[in-house]
Length: 489
Ligand code: GLN
Image 1 (cartoon, rainbow, N blue to C red):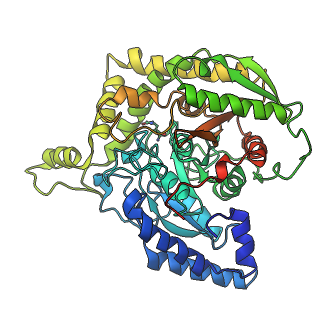
Image 2: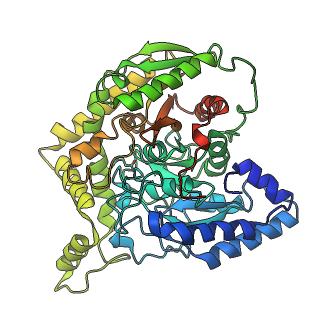
Image 3: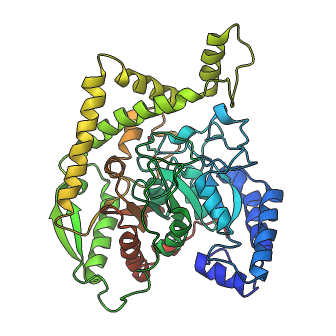
């Protein structure tokens, strides 16, 4: 059961081979068995999950289930979930039981999916290794002395170890794609505005997007079908016609399904900076894509080297504003002792936030302050425009852009934790995509030293369906994505 695709699970549920309650129970048992080792979940609530599973079984019995009805899905603990502790990986929200559902949670609920648990994450989604969580680091199921990637590391570890059939994540600068790469999963960051941010705790609002983390592109398509859609409660949600993201997966198989298709290879992604073993696997995947009929063309993204610097001005600037709401007054952590209102604020924030979050607030406040705004924030916004222009030019020559997702396979826990700049550089291939608001997907492309590596495909705006198809074609002729880490049978 734990190796079945979402579609196969749906068929098993419809055929009464298994009930949603039994399937949910199976995963709850696996979580009880393996989560102490991985720390992938912050909260599981068997009673609540099983109640949802019973409702799904009733719906299935009536014969009106949809593609996800009765399937347990894990959610990153950044999504407000009614009646569930919603911590965002922070002490600041360690006592926050959400009174409402995020749009993403509500959409899965409407689809009949079962909320299986809330997954661990970097504090307020700030990190690339899942080491900044107040709830402790998540371990990589492929090697538990390594990080799973971040910030959606709990979701990635859970799906990789088969502690959930699939999960959600969020991606501000790589937080879906990078853990997907480090845990051998397929993960997609949709175009900005495709998935509602309502009830998704804000980090950097102009960059944040929710997306699926699963074992295959086909599974991601089904999840995105449930997640995407206009929401008037999010002012940046796009009112576009609904689409079936799996529609291209069934069509045009044959010998060379990607004939006439142009894959752009940016010179900036194939120079120094990527480990040779990851590069070798990416090159091998390019050869496979040529076998599928695709043509490769050289393109250039000349502003790539500026993207990390621009991101680490813009993201902290937005975070410093978004995190101002955590003041110890309305909800969340409050310092136990204070003399006056100012001390209530300062002590609650000093005690409630971890070191990385404080670093971002300090940087963000600095770059927005009078006298520095023009030098840092405005400059970064100009670079953001240059980066978007680079992509626009590249897409005049190609249909998708291909490169590595992460410059290395999973690194050791603690290896980069003391050096923020090293940590920030692990997002070099993912960050520009968020600055431009484009969709991108990471998929497994092989192993080096027993650890998985990820291949990234970047598309033009609203080409999610095509990206999923291009990933799917590779998954039909490769088996990397089917590999499971040892010890989780
Ligand atoms: N690693 C990046 C950061 O720390 C991106 C995180 C994310 O995508 N949420 O900000």
